[in-house]
Amino acid sequence: MQDASDSSRSTLGLLPPISAVALWQRLRAMLGRRPFLKNVSIMLTGAAAGQTVSLVLSPILTRIYAPEQVGILSVYSALLTIFVVIASLRFELAVPLAASDEDAINLVAVCICALAFTTALMAVAAFTFPERILEEFWPTPINAWHVAVYRGLLVLGFLCLGGYYVALYLATRQGAYPSISWTRLYQGIVGPSSQIGLGVAGVGAPGLLFGSILGQSTGTLSLFHHVLRSRRGLLSAISLRRMVALARRYRRFPLIASWAALIDAAGGDQLLYMMVTTQYSARIAGFIFLAERIVARPLSLVGTSILQVFMGEAGKTVTSDPGHFRRRFYQVISRQFLLSLAWVGATNLAAALLFSTVFGARWGDAVIYLQAMSIGYLAHAVVLPVFHTLQLLEKQTMAACWQVGRLLLIVATFAFCIGNKVSAPNAILLYSGIQAASSVVLLGLMAGAIRHLQR
Image 1 (tube, rainbow, N blue to C red):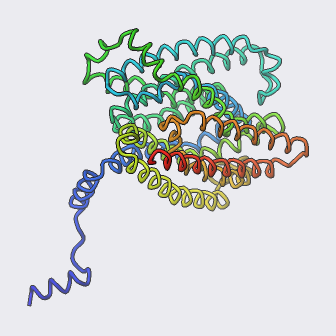
Image 2: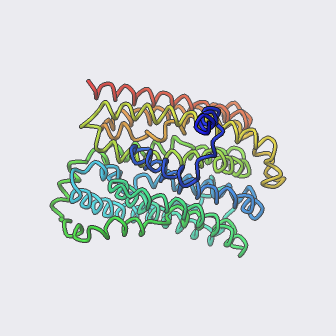
């Protein structure tokens, strides 16, 4: 009778719940059988934790800094984002593709040399750029002291963030996903915390900029140390001859991918901040920047986390197992779409109900811009985890054509909005639609290139 009773209870689902320890063991066993999912979960853990901290601290930031000051950060971030993509002349993308660890460390040396060269060029450009032109697109009036500070912060941010990307791709090649995950957490803590501290100290907008640099580049040295500590002899493999040979082997990255990435960055949301600042107001630019932090930034962290794992795996399978590469591509974008759709819908609903309460009354008008940008954020979030697919397939020319086409379309959209005096919300909505359509086209190009690879 007892056996029958136990069987009945089991059938009806009345047995006591599985313990947390047992569930954890089952989860670990499942992830052990699926390395890709395991690595993504590791990356997402750090990214989610860091972003949670950042979101929790955001209401404090919005009460310390005015929308106009956040507008200054948006213009600075736009300039830095546009130029930092060529900090290492895109040689960092070749690091996961290197045939051996010795080649990888020599490529890292090439990246560092390229970073030193481009940083010097950035310093010359930043400190010789005419002040009268700078005043035309800078969000607020600036004096000589502010100009010097902003120029210096641009160069510093370029160097620090460029170094982080080199360390990131080296760690990706080595599969150091836990270390990368920890840097995501540190970035979410260090960035907003330093901005709050500097704001309370009365530093003003430069504090926002400096805190952003600290947050984005946190973990650079720790990533290098983690990768090299187990291979201390690897540095001895660096030679000028091998560096030159590898630079020639991957010359398409600086010759095509670098300027294409520059165009791509400009064709993203970076030109938007400059257009909004000059044609509308720094206040609206601040609204859009906050919307990006709330809606797009979490999706971006998820997307880039998956991208790092996707790049690490694809570097091994793109030539050896194209069928697996294709299946992984479609698996990633389909699941990213569902996740992104749920997040964008939830944040739009929450913003309509709670934005003014959470961030302060002076930020209430940001809701309409958040809603207008959401379709673009959704499409970009779907393509982000596989964004470097054309680069992995060495289709740099195809990627460059898409990037040029998108940039021209966006410039034409801006010109239309300015010429016809389109209102700010409608201009942002039109821009968001163009970005979404461009992302769909890019996915189509990637899918076509993968089919060609299999044939």
